[in-house]
Length: 426
Ligand code: FDA
Ligand code: NAD
Image (cartoon, rainbow, N blue to C red; front, side):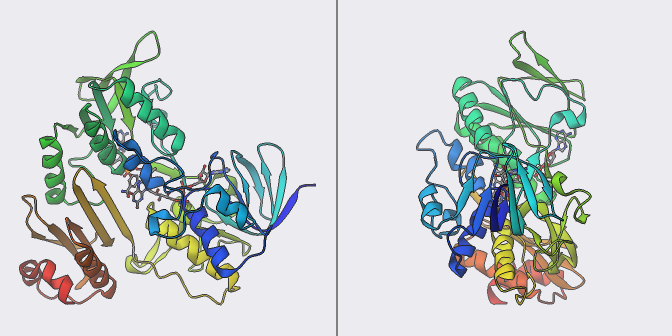
């Protein structure tokens, strides 16, 4: 016999925290909700791990960045969960789930049953071994997905201050960690296979601005190649990173950010999967009507894309979680999730936001020499995506609003001439 709850959230990350807040806002009784997480701490704002957490001066530390501080909502500390009668089962990995019987089995052997399950298992970092390279377990090689990883990186930066850092991957983790490593006085080289950084989102022109900025901070770029092996000394420490192009980079610290895989394995063969995630409808409900999925693990219908997609960003984790709870509590009277994708990053003194889809023709605008600049994406005669670096709060709100309205764009040259003014006056 185990414990039984009306609602169980599997996973204790960003989505779990926002779902918990929404449950309490809509009114649940003590003892109805349980959150089970492998992590030893209650949900926190994961984006802090590659930003404030890595600062050499006055770094962010828990409890300051528990959810839902990132959306200026209540900060859900352990005390908050207690006061709201929410059961936290922490440091506990769920080993198996039986969606037919509505039960979960934890690592400690406890069976927990539910009436409604919300899957919020997020994702795991891809390992170099999955690309045929050994050495991930070396003491100075670091991934960045959770608090334990972030603590390791902080220790590594302290012990190798002034040394060489090699960053593998030119995506979000690569860019944000490279900036943090520089701020921690390390000599940084970034290595990635594409022609430019942030290839999933940036145009070559946008990427060129950030790469030049990074170079001005001392970062070196090795593009169009990947690592083939590490040199590892007798203490198990990586001393050099060997690349496919035959060159070798000395390394005191290696940070790897080569993408993620959603944590779906507990549900393979039990729920319908799509595009690597758990397929859900506009209510975030999976192929089993008692099971919902939210955050990085969910593949949901996104109107602006005209198809279902899985997103890997904090805003969609927060909003999909709240939407799922609304749908559950309103017993499916709730509307469809109508989400405008929103991505952002902050590095050094720079800050950008992106809304919508980066598909179709691109029109750049603004001052690419260090001022405010951006880009619009136009598909089938309509604005579908907007990017802005260095904007004000009002300007970011304007591009978000314009992108959601999807206005007709007949003349790309005119759009370029109007630049940011187009979004502000839509
Ligand atoms: P999340 O990964 O947050 O949580 C999943 C939880 O499930 C974890 O607690 C995990 O331990 C648990 N879990 C998994 N399997 C389990 C099991 N079997 N049993 C028990 N528990 C289990 N996005 C953005 O828009 N802007 C940004 O600046 C950043 N910055 C950023 C920095 C870093 C370092 C990372 C790693 C990620 C970001 N992101 C981001 C992405 C953003 O953090 C991400 O999209 C959300 O955390 C996703 O929230 P979820 O709740 O879906 O997963
Ligand atoms: P990513 O998908 O952003 O980038 C992966 C990068 O790995 C690619 O750009 C590529 O350069 C590189 N790569 C792929 N295969 C490689 C290989 N074999 N060898 C070397 N490089 C290779 O993923 P990430 O940077 O690892 O980020 C992980 C997750 O964290 C993502 O979901 C991301 O959205 C999230 N995140 C988001 C933010 C943000 O939104 N500001 C910040 C940090 C992390």
